Length: 114
Image (cartoon, rainbow, N blue to C red):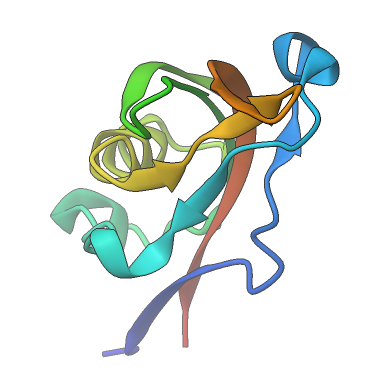
């Protein structure tokens, strides 16, 4: 059986979406604050892989206020697992005029089997 590997892009500098354009800095995920998503059993059995792009609305306290899949990996179960797990992460909030500001951030998550 193939081993599995899932990874966050190392360059997880989060790209701001439309609301964050007004922010001086975009939110940044604290990758140590959360567990990586677990491969769903069915997706593992079916050898599904792909990259899911997600948007997270980060509040001034660094918690995710809202989330959405912006581009699917091609697997609903992989998308859901990534969105659910990464929505639990803490972020350094974005700033506007030097103050914490609610802003959208974009995160890519890669699902791989090796």
